[in-house]
Length: 385
Image (cartoon, rainbow, N blue to C red):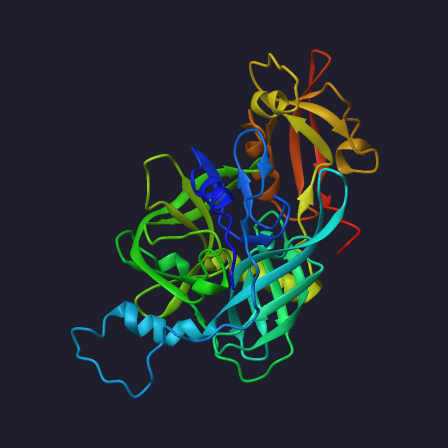
């Protein structure tokens, strides 16, 4: 029998003016640490639903295939649920956390995933499987199997998981460049955990290319009013033709405001997935500097009085910027002639290039302005990859 800590559940839903990396519903027994990530302009933390979970679910929402319904009832949502629903899975992330006394305990986070290859390849969000000690995949037929992490990319919040199964139902990946505002959008996933596995919510595409700043990076997402709740992360956003047009990833939760969910466009996801399957990570160019603008400096207890540019706080010696002579205290003013006055602007300017490209960086070094040509190199990968 499940036990729910209603106090913590209330805290998880009463979030004021925050951007929440869509929900991995986190299950555990003693800690507020887990897999869901809540982001505001100061800190990031986890929200938790305390419960005891079994790992076997039953397919209770889908009628028998021989059930006949009228044309009026056979709506796009009905057809999509039947077509895509079997390819949407639950993903349980078992990890080890520590309490305030540094005592280790096991906690579980639950999110969603989409099978895109019949031999067991699944798309999900990075934050759904982050720091996983064990990954368990719950299929729509009620079976559960262990999953293996193929690759993950924190910057795009995309990951690929593999299960050792054959002839699985798959979802068709569509073309997100053809999406238009106002067309139907159907979200399928596991809001608040596996007890609600395979939930279907319906809305429309509210906006295209909605730009949000998350973790000092700027991302473009689809906005939808289809309900997206904790646990939906990694699930499918589908059009009326039954094609996946986005991966549900974030929810903007503002007091008194509903119907603002976000998904990563599937064309962006495809390119990330290709690299993850090829080499387990995404090769990205980098300068090799830690930079501050006014908001990020304030977050770390510093105060900047810059009128323009971004402050170089740290330089990696063995990096493109280090070899170009950048030092702490320098101010980056522009990249390739475009002014940069925030951390996201610098990251986006660099990310618009490929490894090996040359960029011209205008920098103020002790009152002297110089323009330096730098060859971008591949960002080093974390040691655990």
